[in-house]
Image (cartoon, rainbow, N blue to C red; front, side, top):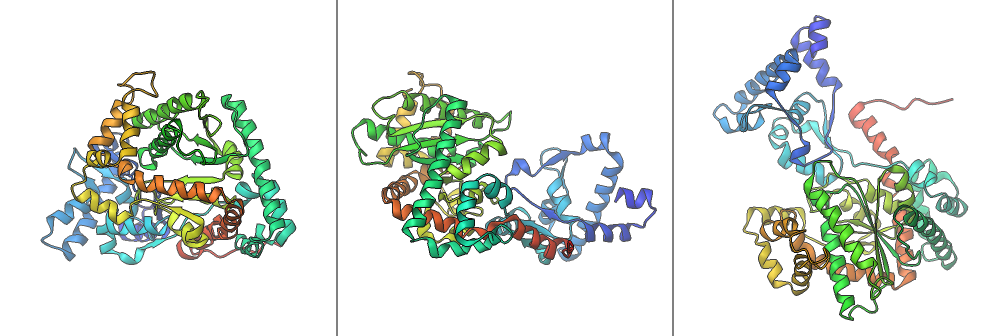
Length: 484
């Protein structure tokens, strides 16, 4: 708007028409802290002319709203580009929304929550501008480059047309029950696990057995992604093994990786907890032949290329309604990992496509989470009623994983018992039961391998090629250019 008006001498209405025909807004998060707001005072000092334009955009927006709802002052306050509740701040997501031709989320659930919650008032004003385009990932990097052995096996089995049309992976379905193909599939996975085991040893000094179940939670460290739910279950498993229980449980390599925001205290406590539990478990001869924990440092795409092909189990356990989409879930599934997860983000669409029998589902739904938040959820009662959960929390509180220091993880424990905003304690029992299903399936290698093949075969829709095609057709309105 500044360029069109100030530099090119265009009238406001014509400039705004061009902006609205040019700009579209793809939202990638529901987290309030990521929906940025900027202080009016700061913008007035750094970009005073831009602030004048923002004020005018807002004035016209509010006039439009007044015309439709003349007596609704609460609506005006909610929809204003200037949030005046805690000082005066510009709501950047609202500015992007009002200026855009299209607004989309990146998974069906995420887009619905944008329409029904985060941008509800804007959707009421202009519902036709809202749509969904589910994320995709590039098979060139995350299969063909990262997993050459699997690529060669697939090429030898169904040809290489799938590399240009990922949904051709569906042709693998007819091979899912073939013993010879299952054997070859298992050999590829085993080779990838051997390579990852070497990487784990080089980076962390921890020796892991490639024959174990590789259980991976690889994602940004955040309370809503619930690495601490995973760790609480690992502690539960450890305590049961120490008591001589779960002797038939398959051995697991429990792998974590991911980065945290530098100032995010809770994330750093979770990382510290992972390492503390790992130090105890890995050095305990009673259990360390049945479970080993490793945290790969300095996670990036290059290290991810080693992890996705080797993973057996993909942990996608965020609180329902918190994840926009996720793309790691797609990368894991395309490489034949089975998912344990909630009905959150693109997990829902992955489960629909791979089949519920090939996906380990647990936890509250998004609507159940919303009801709990609106109700009277008491996490301490959940702790008191669940004996296994209580033993886990008490062990942590008593300093079992902190050399007897009962204060080391007290802030995390107090947060769970007093608030449990992300419903870790509430979902613990169903998560634990679902992990038993994982054990049972792993103990049937034919069943596991079949499910692994079907995950790859049925996830071709999650290609970035499909996603970009949808953007071209529905958002950008551009056509392909033939290359001679």
